Length: 281
Image (cartoon, rainbow, N blue to C red; front, side, top):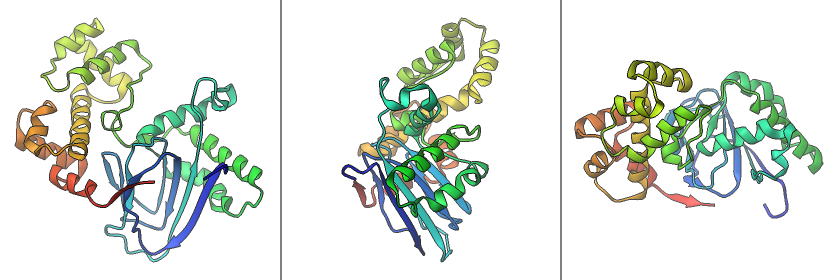
């Protein structure tokens, strides 16, 4: 990118051939007319529909759009790569840009946007590559980011444990519990212990945790363990059984079943997927 603020690639094609990769620059990637393509971001593995829009702001988060079962011959992909400083004294830390900064911090795990969000910025994405004046192109791009930052339906893709992102929470009690889980996920985690940390009864804490996170405590613990397991499948040569027990699961067949249900592939298939040609750009 050199001294340029944006790199914009607006392509029409019949297939996805680029391998799984990660890179220093941030990326907003838009895809249309490619139903059935498999999108992998970290340990998230999903089939996309007619439209897809994802923001990634981590240099270490692997991602790829794979052809899979897509038969469309009219695929369009608009990739916008850019740099941004998220420091406390940076431009984006100023009040008018705080929603963009908050969104970019979340996008370290990858962010997917709803169809409603996409339609709200579609025209700006559609015309961005034709804006000849660099200043206006940057302003249009930041308008896209601002509109997306107001979304109430954006969702993170990779788990925080896989993406190695620090746990954050609006509730001090929830934060203390999440930090405890992050440090002790390899061991048995008891509800009574977590309730004591939060200073609540077990039943009250279970309701409190779901209210603040939108997930049952048991589901959250499983997600965290699967995130660590996925990272080990990518970063180590340990066997699936070793990884299973190292991440707090006490039954291999149960681990395989849960992994396949949540990740839509077996642990072995997940590892093979990531060990395909992989590049850093």
